[in-house]
Each structure stands twice: as C-alpha cells, then as structure tokens.
Amino acid sequence: MNFPQQSLLVTGTHGPLSAAFLNWLEKTPHKVLRVSRHPGVGEFSWEDLWAGNLLESVNVVIDFAWSTITGSSEQHPGIEWRVDLPRLSRLLTRVTECGVSVPRYIFISSGGTVYGNANQRPSQEEDELLPCGWHGFAKAAAENLVRRFGTLGVDFTILRPSNIYGFPLHSGPPRLIPYLLDSIYEGRSFEIRGDGTALKDYLHLEDFLAAMGEVIQQQLSGVFNIAAGKSYSISEVIQLVEGITGKKARVTYRDAQKWDTTRSLLSCDKLMNCSPWRPSISLPQGMHPLPLLKHAVA
Image (cartoon, rainbow, N blue to C red; front, top):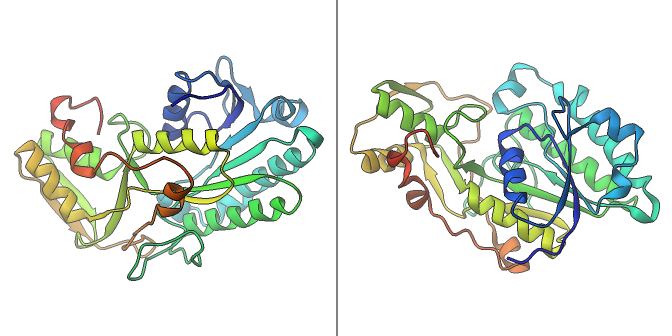
C-alpha cells in the first residue's frame, strides 16, 4: 500500500492496540505526534495538547485514549463520565478551534460491546445500539458526543473493531486466545464464564492495522465496523487451540457475567464496499503459528 505523507496525532499511546498501531506506522512516511497521560521520551502530555498548537500542525487525530476495559468499567460504574467523556469533549472542542486547519478525527469505539447481543443477522453500522454493560454504554455515549461535534464542523470517523487478537502474550489485559494457549502449555486449568456458547468475532491484529491504513488513506468518514465477519463460540476456540497444540484444555466453568455480550456478530460489508480492505486472516490461520513460538504471538 502506498501512503502519501500525512501528519498524525495519536492519543493513548501506551495501550497494546495503539502501541501496535504506532509500530506499524513506523513503516509508513507519516509524521506522528504521540500524546499520553504518562508521556515518555518523545511524547507529549495532555497539558501540552491543551496549551499548545499541536492540533493545528496535524491532518488527522486518532484517538485511542480510554481509561477502562469491560471488567474495570463494571467495577467502577460511571467512571468514564468522570474521566473519558470530559477529556473527549475538551479534545473535540480544541479540534473545532483549529479554524481552517481543523484535522480529521478518528475515534476508536468497540464493536464487541456497543451493539449488545445480535439478533439473527450480523450487526450493521446503522443498527440501534443496545449495550449490555457499562463499557459499551460509555462507548456509545462517546460516539453520540462525537456525532454532536460533527454538527460543529468536525470531520469524524468512528471505528468499531471486534475482539482483536495477535498481541504479544502478556501485552495488556487478559485475552481468551493467549491465556487459553498459555494454560494448555503450563497444564493449568483455564476458567471461562458461561457455558462456552458465547459467540464472538475474532479479528487478527494485522487485519485491524490494514483496515486503519485504508481508513486513513481513503479519508473515510462515518461509522465503520472492523471485523472478521465470522463468529466463533468459546467452545469452538478451545477446540481449535486443542487441535493446533495437540493438548487437551482443562476448563473450569463459572457463572456468566450479566454484562457480557453473548452473541456478537458483526458485518464488515460497509468498509469493504468503501475500500479495497478485506479481512485476510481467518481464526484458524491466525492461531496456527502459536505453538511454534509460545511467547511470540497469541
């Protein structure tokens, strides 16, 4: 893919997804500014962004910053309204103040939580959002705020990725695939919530990064799911890992979390109709190299 150079500002740079995206950006000609709550070398703080003219110097803002995951959101109900939504409102206000230099704004939402449980067909971007838990409820509220600022001239894109895998084994919060793999190698019991029938769409990290590249290059505006377009039950994932490793998983079942989505089906037709992007790595393909390098990717 050929990328004309752009100036990008990326927030939330220490999360595993944004870190993977930033590593991917190093292969492109884009100029990148990084903003974090805990800035490291070569990074800016949020105070730098509020007080300076960083936004006036970039073409695109890609906003990964978010303070919770699904579990921590349930432990601290409403925390996003005290932390994330005020920050988002302030950032979007600053974007509108850029005058003729208003950058495009890309918000990373959550396709796995904002829709709630799908009905008979995969969830599409125009469907009503009926999240089951606080995390999805907060992301949906953030999307509404982004849309509202769209009426004030912000050219926005909302991306709803599904459950992304392909990170380093112990990168970020626990995820089903790497920790299932790790438990099999170590001979430990693996705990799951529910009876194993919960359906999720699993998107490989490389497919997510390729989709991000197309969204930036094509300058796509609006709302887009980023998904593999095929969902697997937890039991099916366990069977796939057992088949790849040749080892039997020791599974302990616990009561399902009431806030967890149990039927996540996502359509990626809109993004495929607007760009050359296609999900290229199926779940069996994406997991197949895992036993070769235990601590490399999962």
